[in-house]
Each structure stands twice: as structure tokens, then as C-alpha cells.
Amino acid sequence: MAELVKELIPAESERAAGGWRVWAIRIAISLFAPILLLGFVEAGLRVFGVGFPTDLTVPCTVQGRPASCYNLFFTAPFFPPGMIKTPQMYAIPAEKPAGTFRIVVLGESAAMGDPEPAFGFSRYLEVMLSERFHSLKFEIVNTGSVAINSHVVLPIAKGLAKYQPDVFIIYSGNNEVAGPYGPGTALTSAGMSLPVIRGSICYRSTRIGQLLTKVGTPKREWRGMAMFLDKQVRASSPLMKNTYANFEHNLRDTIAGARDSGARVIVSTVATNLVDCAPFGSLHREDLGSDALRSWSTMVQQGAEQENAGANTEALQSYFAAAKIDSEYAELEFRIGRTLQGLGDYKGAKEHFLRARDLDTLRFRADSAINDINRSVAQEFAGVDLVDADAIFAKESPNGITGSELVYEHVHMTPHGSYLLARAMFLQIAKQLPSDAGHSLQAEDVPSQAECERLLAFTKFDHARVTTEMLRRLQEPPFTNQLNHSDQLLRLVMKADDANENPNDTASQYQRALARRPNDRILHFNYGVFLNQYNPAAAAEQFNVARPCDGFPLVTPDGTVH
Image (cartoon, rainbow, N blue to C red):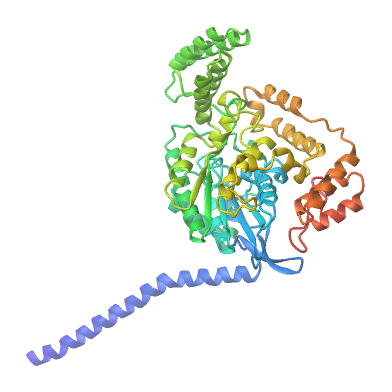
């Protein structure tokens, strides 16, 4: 009997082991079969051309030579179908030419140079460097784009790290709330943790993800900043904690990726318009009762009447009385700042203008916390320099408060603002380069703004073109909702240059600039824009030279495709 049991035990063990093997196979099949199926579906969608590749660059040729061009569909994971935004087109040679110093600019529309990238800070920087360091060829790849934020900047930096950049410039922070995955966005899901955001980006980078997103999301049109009017976010919102943490994490990862490529990094704080940009949105504190709201409104109305009558002291008393009831309303802080400015208390005025910006519930401007992160993170890394644009602009502004002299509306720089930022970047980069002058370059060695603008052919025609674009924007929401909207319009009209420049003089300025910089495709493009109204055939020749890569279509400001 015992021997029979001994014989049965191994048999039972073998059956148990066999059962476990069967179950292991079943579990493996249940786990890997869906993955395998998804792999086949993904491959099939790619074969049949469904969706888009989302790599940063795609192969192209420039004058018959191999290069990498910006992929127009790179931002598909970050924007709704039909609303993909792109930067100015760029192309990078497959082989970096000897003697080339390559600079990559990362950031949003302010980094791009909006409203006219041809005269953004990277263009001033390019001519400054070229004029003072003749032994090197400077190549600036500006990846700045409208409506993106640090979630998009990070993969751009990773994608360009392989192209042997010498310097990365990071000018970023305005769109952390309104941009993709921010708590105030109209573009994607909002307010998620960083791991979920990165998972969503990965999913939407696949053809399956793009297809399902397209099916589940109605096609929409880009409507500019007006798209975000119902996306107000309080400074006290718990979602802002995630926003700051995500920005800080992305910035660290961006710097680390850039440094791993061997490049140095320049991180800049972000300059914003304080004195001439009233808040876009304001909300009362959430626990404000109806009686308190009536008292608050009475005090503010009284203060406004006193301010309009020039009684700033009395107006300030009324505004402070209202602030005791509710100090979270951004527009009230702006009123207090404006009144203190009228009384000559510029230090106090700046404090309240800063608070007005930081309380603005339509958060299109980098706030104090974002700039503090830029400063602190930059100091953590070796090989990273800080350019404090926020402080530089304040120092160069009347009474130390940045306004429309340097920033058109809320974040986009005027020519003088672009020049100041470029000068600061130049001085940082010059430290790394052998000086053609035989001595360490100083601030007085930087080309003047007038010299730069001659080389860029920034003509009266172009000034008028930029001013017209800014006036158009300011007549749309959310600018039309700002407390000082009429002042903004009047100020811009008064500053507009006389457009009645002799066309022959304008053409001569372009020709002189092109004689100095014959390979500058942006100069050729702008010259074509000017010529188009007088000689379309000559304009077409300029547009042809301006193509960033072979076969790339150009769309001129009038909508014509060349």
C-alpha cells in the first residue's frame, strides 16, 4: 500500500506541475496577445498611412544636401485635430560644417519672436555674434512656437540634442497654465499629474492614439487667446501646485538632456508687461457673501470715480478699504498699483502690479513662482548660466516697472525688448568664444540696436506691418476685456511709425542688408513680402531663395502659396 502511495505522489506532482504550466501559458497569452494585437494594428495603420509620424524632424534636402527638417506633425500629441501649431520652419544640415557654432532656442511664442519672428531676439543675437566673431559661422535654430509649454519643450530639446548644439537657450514659462495639459488649457485634458501627462503624450504619439483621439474629438479651429476665456484658474487653486511642480521637473529634465549633449545651457527668466497690461481675468474670493460683495463694489466704484477726478490719495483709501473685504480680485490690485504710481510711490506700485499679474485668473503670463523656478533650477547645474530678463527689463524701464516700451501687450517683446534680451545672451555666449578683438568683449563691444536693425533690414515698412498686426490683436478678446484697453490702443497708435517711406529707400535697405548677408533666407522672405505689392515676379524669386528646404512650400502673409 505504501509503495502504491509513493507511486501516486509523483504522478500527482507531475499533474500539478502540468496544470501550473497550462495556467502560466494561459496567463502569458492573456497578457501578451492584446499587446501583440495592438502591435499589428499599429503597424497596419502605419502601412496604410493613417496618422502622422511625431518625431521632431524628418529627412529633407537643402540645396541638394541631406538635412533634417522640422516635422509639421510633431505637435500632434499636444493639440486637438485640425489645430496643430508649428514654429518657423527650420532645417539642420546632416553634417555640422566645420567652424559652425550652433545655438538652439527653446520656448513659446515670445521665444519665437512673435509678432514677427524675423525681428525676435534670436535674430538680433545672430547678427550681433556674426558681426563680432568673424571666424565662426553662427547657426541659430529657433524652435519657439505658439501655445506650447514645457511639456512640449522637453521632447524638442531631446530631439535636437543629437545635432551637436553648442548652446541651448531656454526662454519659457508663459504657457504653463494655458498650454497643453495645463489646468487652464483648451487644448488637451487638464490638471493631471506628470506621469499621467507623459503617458498621454506617449499614447497620442501612436497611430492608434491619434486615430481614437480624432474619432473622439470634434475638429476645431484655432481662435487665439479667446479660446481660453472660460478657463480661469485662481492663484489659490490646488491645481497650481501641480503646475509649478511639473514645470520644475520638465525644466530639470530639459537642462539635463541638453547638458548630456555636451552643450552649455542659458536659462532665462521671463519678462512680462506689468504697468500697461491689466489682468485678463479676475475672480472674487470664494467665500465672499452678497453683502460683502455689495460693500466691495461700492468702495471700488467710489475709488474709480476719485481716480478719474485725479484724487489719487482718496482713491487709494477707497481701494484699500475694498481690499480689506476681498484682496484676491486681480483688477483691484492693478487699480491700486496705478494709483500708487500716480502718487509717485513706484516701489509700492510695482508690488501691486506684480500681485495683479500673479492673481490674474487668465494666466497667459509667467508669474513670480515660475520665474523663481527658472532662477533656482538654473543655479543647480554646472554648465548652466542664468539671464534674468525679468530684472534686466525692470532696470531698463521707467521707474523700474516693465511696460509697453519693452513688451507690446502681455509677453511679446518690442524691438528694444528683443535687443536687450539678445545683448544679455550675447554677453553670456561671448565668454565661451575666442575674441576676434583680442580682448574679452564687454557691453560696449555689443553692436548697437540701430546697427543690428540695419543688418536685419528692419524698415519702416516692417515697423508698420508689425504695428498693424498688434493693433489687430488688441481689438480681440481677451484684450478688449482689460481695464486699460483703450489706453493700450492709443499708446500703440501713437508709437506707430510713419509708413510713408519711399519704396525705393525701403528696397535699398533690403539690398544693402542682403549684400552683407546673402544667405539669410529670412531677409529674402521679407524682401519678397515687400516686393510683392510692386513686382510679383521679383518677389517670387526672393521667396524661392527663402525656402528652408528643397520643395518646401512657402505661404506669404496674403495667403499665397509659393
